[in-house]
Length: 115
Image 1 (cartoon, rainbow, N blue to C red):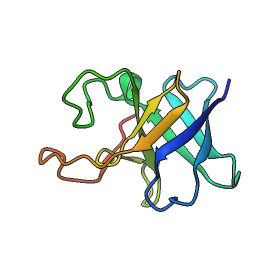
Image 2: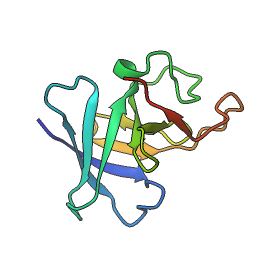
Image 3: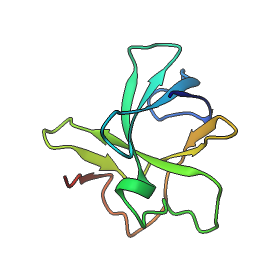
């Protein structure tokens, strides 16, 4: 089941798009497609960090009632995830936004994704 989302903080490089749908991938727990409803050709594969990267808090220091997703990229062959620019989602409210994490422990934007 898809969940409609309105972005309150735009995605880097996609600032002109505001409305998306988050859809789970069948048979792949924690894996989703984030597709623009304004331009259906724009889609990103994202991972729910609670399922796929337990312990990753995206630099959030307070408890928040939100889910954190990271974007998966395959630009250089093997899949990587972007830990510095996660997407924070409030599913019940239907809003999301991308944040930039200022964390010296995250020295690389893209890290290899383990199977």
